[in-house]
Length: 198
Image (cartoon, rainbow, N blue to C red; front, side):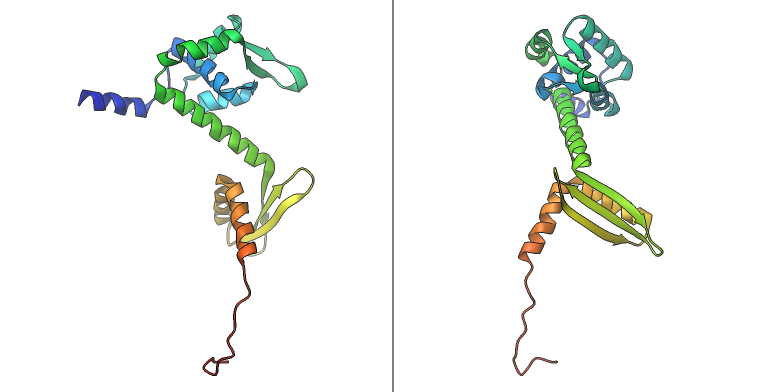
């Protein structure tokens, strides 16, 4: 009974409120991402998802920067966090001090976050008002040309936004289904049989 309660409490995983654990978790996240991370993106993944408490996040980050576990790169007009060798060592050797449920939760949050950013840069949704409803204008962008430019009708803005939100849940899947449907579409077959009603 006690063992199952422990497992349940791990799955619940409320936000972290221990600075030492937060330090390790931030290093672990940056290590798993494996590239420089925009300061706003790291904040969104860590705090906006309610995995880490804002104040502990700030304290942990300040310490990691002063301790040279993380450096700030200001090149190309962006402010990015980069994990140093010291930070990587922290992530690898101390990761087990952070419950696996937190490690998994923050990595999944990061994967979802970066996928959403990618979708938003490749798929544009616009709502166009009409006299009797709205168009949901969906464009799938490529480097030079549109892969798809599609308008769907919705009777009101609420339904238009629902369609747009559903497309953005999995834009690649949406595009693939449209493409597959177009390629699989066949002409309706007619029969010259005497029993056919004209």
